[in-house]
Image (cartoon, rainbow, N blue to C red; front, side, top):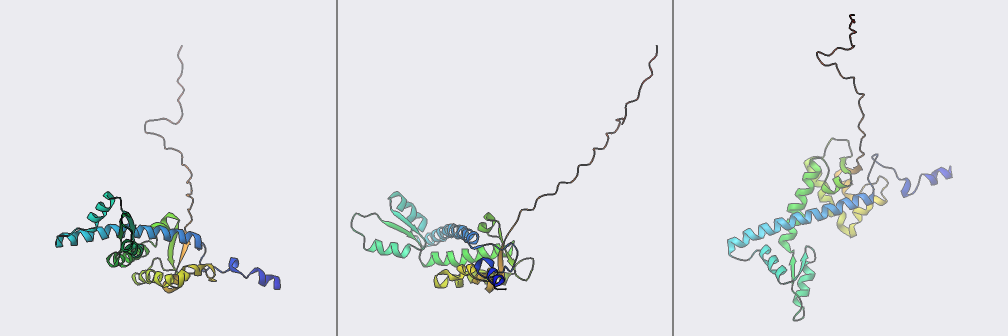
Length: 226
């Protein structure tokens, strides 16, 4: 009896709430792909918005400033390094290269809310697969067996990312010790991530070809005349 208890305990023997449930490494790699995808889209939207607003004010937009920074061999920082770049720029020594930083309140709002929420909600709602999850063969599914996630459920899962990020991203790491293999945002939205298996196509038996019109099945022997 004691041997059975030891065999059925521990992280390796935890119960899975769904067959084929994805593990931590594959889920993490897929999320990093989505992170960079959202970042790239946010940069494009940020430049477009900045140029439109700057044109109305008669000022230089961020895209124009970026091109000037590239011509002057300045260092370029994108995203969350803007605060550090601004501090370094303020205390830089004379003759040191300039640092152009893409970020701040406007960029953060575009990245986190406009692009981030839109990207994940649409992907979860329509197919349950983001770019990263498609790349690694994963899919977000509903725990109650519904064919696809609803709008509010998709929003809950995206909003759950913020909760999982708190306290050193413990919500993402929770999949390592949870007895059902769920993260914090999985539990908030009632979802999980499964691996998709490639189904082998069943070959249908080939049927004999139908005889062509005007063609006889068997040759007819001709009588020879002498």
